[in-house]
Image (cartoon, rainbow, N blue to C red; front, side, top):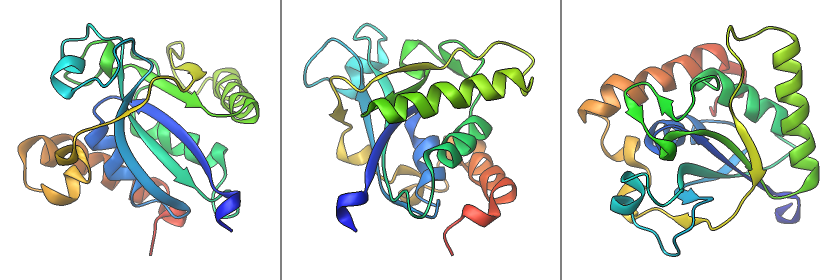
Length: 180
């Protein structure tokens, strides 16, 4: 079944929060925090934080489409972050926190564009969706201490105030998709 696994990369603000949710999703086999779509090779967290590299904080998700569809992943994604907020999620501001879907195939691009069109036509949000849909480029895995950050630091202030509530919202809204 390994051949059927797919990868999608999502930017929804701080990667600690996005990762914390998606590690709990049935059908997601791997979640990795990183940076993408910037213009500096081998970028570091400190460089990304300046906003000058063009990179976005992202999570790269490996998923089994036999267990979860890309559309379901995007439904979760649009509930746990604000796709109408340009270059900001909560108190985190800058281009490195932009909303983005970074695809690895034309089929994924189509699903993402169709999903955004559906959500827009349904009037789900009061403001226009600003989520960029682009091919994944210049991906760099984040430093080791960013991986599994919420799991390793559940009592850290940011995790308690921001990541924890996102995980709780996912579990309440998408209980059917949570890992047992």
